[in-house]
View 1 (cartoon, rainbow, N blue to C red):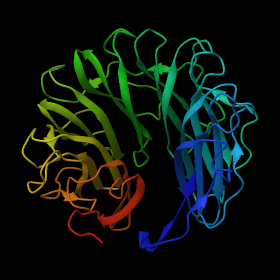
View 2: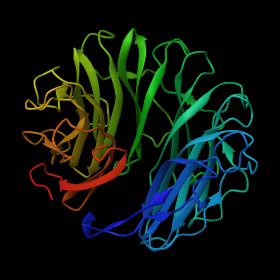
View 3: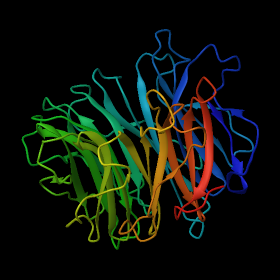
View 4: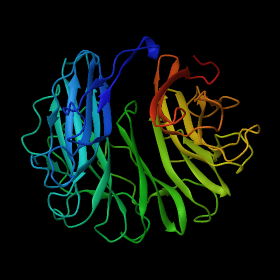
Length: 419
């Protein structure tokens, strides 16, 4: 596991810093990192199999309090020093209010198989230490009785912590949620199923997304996923307008073509001050396109759907949309297989994006391409996007030099300029 930091808005980069304590890189496999930042503190968690004779993963953690210049020794988070079971897919969030306290409160969730089938676990800390004496299990059926995995984690900055996950306790894959109102010390005694409207376990839900609207009068929590209750995959949505205390009894279908008539996958969510944007890819026109809808009243009603990719409809796969947001500024970016007309042979995916300055009501006229090698010639994959100042910052895996490398670029968050 390595780290690097870009200063001056990403124009100047330092030396790579290895975070995982395996100097030769041969004793363990470190993968699937997640990162969170607060002030000058940077926190990273990842999967690591150094402790196991069988390749099982543990969750490891490291942090820096000087913007990534120096790092603490990495530490084992899960209570499994011999690597007897798998602990996977760590998620991380951090809360910090400089005006109230110098402390940073850190939240981490994952799933692991210590009791048999996977369960959802959680811990918290203050300033990167003082973790809970014992990890907390968030799914409230019998331990290890059914597969619970792929959690998504978010917080509201005032003590609310929210986790959703996939759960097979009823047979098929459902969506469940639990929440805490005291910064993760205590959780609801009963988790809640979110994919209502059909009998539990009768369909399969995947591709979970979670976000919190911190600007709402009471923190609002939004969840989305795709499921096959109608045959083909559709996008479904549920919401809580009272900080996770109650959810809608039935999930709301978001894609507006014939129910189950095409496949709609992997929604992305963003929300601010009651404005919710959801985007996904679907194949209603044969090739996958990126569609979006928005709500101005916390998810109670929605605009008509519209396309974000502006090439010929259905002509090339557009996949894996991600959203980044800062107030009313929203950037939507995706992987796109449109073909360079001068290129012979099949296209490799590039990244394109559009931007909105009004919460998704209007978008920049045409999308801009992010990766700047010759179009369609090399795979670009695993895009991440963040907004800071006037720029959108893009990080991705790129194969233009043969094997996979990490590449970075800053571009205008209004969708007009680049650097």
